[in-house]
Length: 350
Image (cartoon, rainbow, N blue to C red; front, side):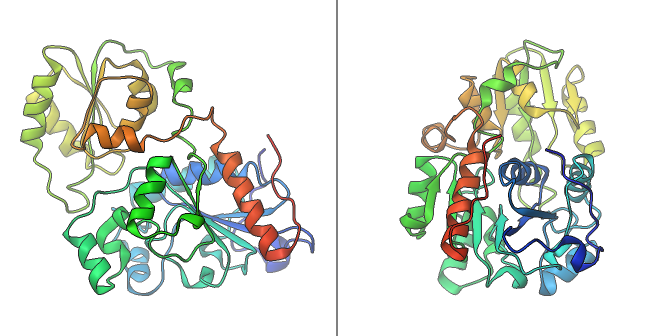
């Protein structure tokens, strides 16, 4: 389904839903978050949908609008925002930036690190985006002193408890979030779009085969420690003479990363763009640092090397349900709407 394009600057009358149709705001972020929101929205066909790039209030909202947070989903001129805007425009998705034409009957979002003021009194369905960061000292400080959740990044996913339901990737993640303090009754194991049908990536037109794929991270761009020399030493050992393909994180400084890679591996192929999942499907082995794409490699049975514990990754591996997670999450949204508005049907099979 391709929805008509609609600017967020339109009049309230132009986007107001009829009396029997629930209004749903889907808050996007990274390209992965945005495509996940779209995968859910495809199955909310009887609802009045609007999509918004990620936003925030207060100081961090102000910093985002002025370009100081372009390395995050809150930026206005960074790569995250560019790809989100491109996706929304390419798919002609109806917009309501910052949800200014609310209130909405339901809000669906991939992050509760920030819970925006204009959705705090609305029913929310939270959807797990992908891998969560391991708990660090910042996580412990947030839990002990009530600091903003974004201080500890995605390790604090789900801790706002501002939502009615939290849709997660697997039983392993359900157990992880429960251990972190999320009530079990608020969690629905639905799988998550983009990670629930990895076999489909085997059918692709990426021309290369027989290589070791290195999927790098944007830790330096987000002010985290990243020893590239140590990474390259590790890659050289793991590759054992096999051809190397590097796929850069979308948020990385491309020129710097490419220069560093080619200085150490002159014959390597470096891709700043392209379908990472297809590259994983065609590789002989996958090397990552901290990236959700390792789940694609594990689901496809690839030899995977990561900074994270393999047994833990296998326990958390997103369920493979043939690409039906978007519909399953839409059904959870339907249940929440029923509880809030009476009997309302909002999802239909595609």
